[in-house]
Amino acid sequence: AYALRVQVVGRSFSEETRSYDNQVKSGKAKATSYSNKNIPGVVGMRVEGEIEPKKQGIVVMLPLRDKTVKLYTESDQFYKDFNDNILPNFSFTP
Image (cartoon, rainbow, N blue to C red; front, side):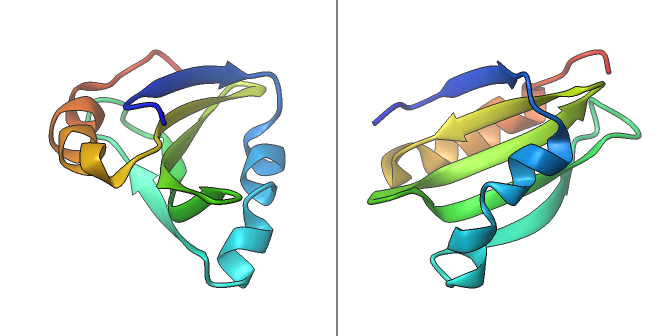
């Protein structure tokens, strides 16, 4: 399990968020909207729970033109650092 993963995925934001529909509909994960004060005007999605089969974590997805930026943590042991240090300090130019 990774403490932090950052990816720029070559799929649109809507395509990437749809890939988590099954986990959310089954109740294995919870999806909420996400915005970051360092990236004004950009609204993404946060998925918490089973992000992959048999893997618990948090994924934050943000649109980047025709791509998607994804930040993950794949272990509940890193949730506090992810929420308190990584997300508040993360930024990019949309």
